[in-house]
Structure formats: structure tokens, C-alpha cells
Image (spheres, rainbow, N blue to C red):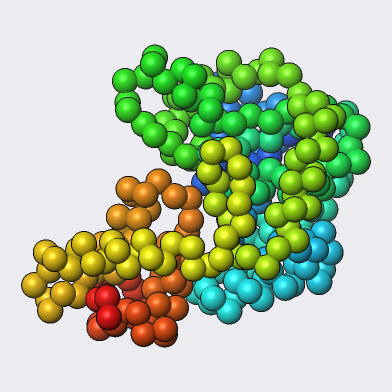
Length: 292
């Protein structure tokens, strides 16, 4: 029975002649649902990283030393983020998976309008630099903007996971015959990866179609300014709920950074004497912040 089951898995993978690569588990889940509705889930293998490419060291990620340096950086700053979870989607496993993709499989990389996806795109293409098969790149957010007039939903997404599934299904259909990126484009992405991965700055932003490396403190002044705005309307001696600040940043600033990173910056600002806090630092809704 075990042999028959193993053979059925192998046969299933053989039928899947197309690889979709994404940069988040939420995005991968949305994609799988959309493909199921379109009736082609059985023909496409969906792969996904489980990383935060917009932050952390990138140097030497193709080897164990670089990977462990990055892992340590995250563990020191976000010890409760569960960096050890979903190991099959982590860097070392995903690098190996990409290297083992057969040459006869079509590859499509899906990305969005944010620093996380755009960094991941360049990293993935650096791994696939020696592959001979065509590689397609679909910017789901750009594709949405081109058809937005046909949807009365007023969205301003930055990532694939922010798209309604019926919209994603339409994007999949209209991008089926998109041409692969050229060898010159592939080379340019690889050069951009070399540039952004060899820097001391640990945060990346995406602006005007360009990736930029910036210091971890890049958003600090804006965070302090936002808290000051909220303080005007608070009667708790000016203290503002941390969850309110995080929710506003994620919901209104249209950034694609994790809540863990925002909280990390809170505590850095507290340690630097720029913020006061009171409450229980167990969860963001249980403590309050005030500009010093």
C-alpha cells in the first residue's frame, strides 16, 4: 500500500507541468483557492517562501553561514514570531526545492507592489540564474490596476493576498500568455540582488519602482509623529494604545512590513528614551505608549 501511495504522489507531480512561486503563505493559500475555482489546481504546483524579505540581513543567503546569520538576527529581535515554524517553506529548504525543479517545468513568479515581494523576486531569480527554461514574472498588483475599472471595489492593494479571490482568478486568466522575461531582464534582476544583498542596512523600501536599503530606524520619526497625533485625543495622561498605533500603520500607511517589526521599533524607541510605556508588554493591546 505504501508503494502505491508513493507512486500516486509521483504521478501527481508529473502532471503538474507549471510551477507558481510566491513569497508568503497567505499569498500561496489565496492562489491555491483561485486555481481550484478555475479547475487547474491539479496542473500547477504552488511553492512559497515563509520569510520577511523586507527586513534582515541578506548577504550570503545561498550558503549556511548567511542563512544562520539571518535566522539569528530575527530570533534576537522577534523571539516569539515562530521563525522555526513551517520548515519546508524556509530558506534552506526552498533553495533546494528551486534548484531541483526539472528543466521541463514552466516557472511563473508572482509578486506585488511592495519591498518584501520585490526583494524575494530578485533572490529567487539569483537562485534560478543557471536555469535554461523561460521564467515568467507576474506583478499581480500591476495586473489588477489594468483591470480595476471592471471591479467596483475601490481597492489599493500592495500584495496578492489583498485581492479578492474573484479578482485573482481573472488575473490568472488574462496573464496566461504573458511572455517570459528576457535574458537581459534576468541579468538586471540578478545585478540588483547583488547590490541590495551587500549592504549593512537591514530594511528595504519600495518606492517609484526601485528597491532601496535603509536603516532599521527609517520609520521611527513617522511612528513618533503618529503617536503624538493620537496623544491629543487621549485622556490617559497622553498614553496611546499600542495596538491602535500598529493598526493604523498597517491599515493606512499601505506599507508591507510585519507587526513584529513595528513592535520591535517601539521597544527600540523606548530603550532610547524617546517613548514611555505603561501596561503589560505581553500583547500590543495591553500596553500604552507616549512620546517622551
